[in-house]
Length: 168
Image (cartoon, rainbow, N blue to C red; front, side):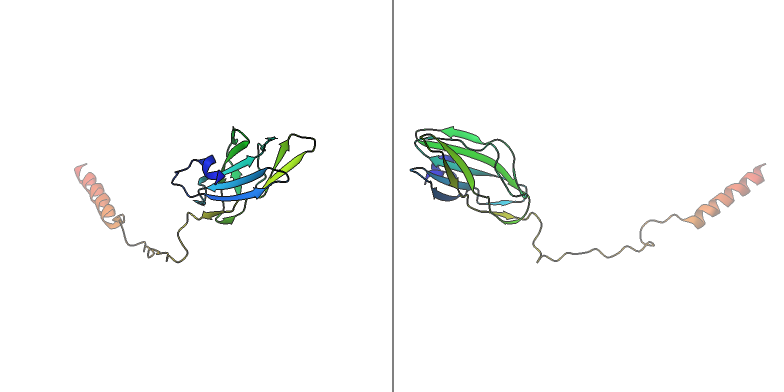
């Protein structure tokens, strides 16, 4: 698949990819690597456009509030193949869908837009599963633990005062 070429064949990370035909002879492929991440963990959205004409990838993606682009895209161009890899991070667990990316195709008389629909990504929570019981410690009674021995301190103070009076 085209995305495997864009990311690097033989990479051990799991990739979820989806191909989209364009309005003309162009077509696009979108992939997410890895396909499952944890909240706050970085992942990449790769877009590949195959077109004889030049394409212009957006600098910023239109993303939902719980998905954030963490940097500019890495761009590559070749013979009729254009690639952009966007670094992203998700902040909410669950299945997240990245909206359609519109890529202008520049060339010819008419202006065309290639719409690439990225696959969804599964975001796992960093919190323990709800099925794990929470073990609470028993409350501490104030008498447990170290206490100041007030009776002994008062007796020692009284003995020191008596000794002082005697030695005067």
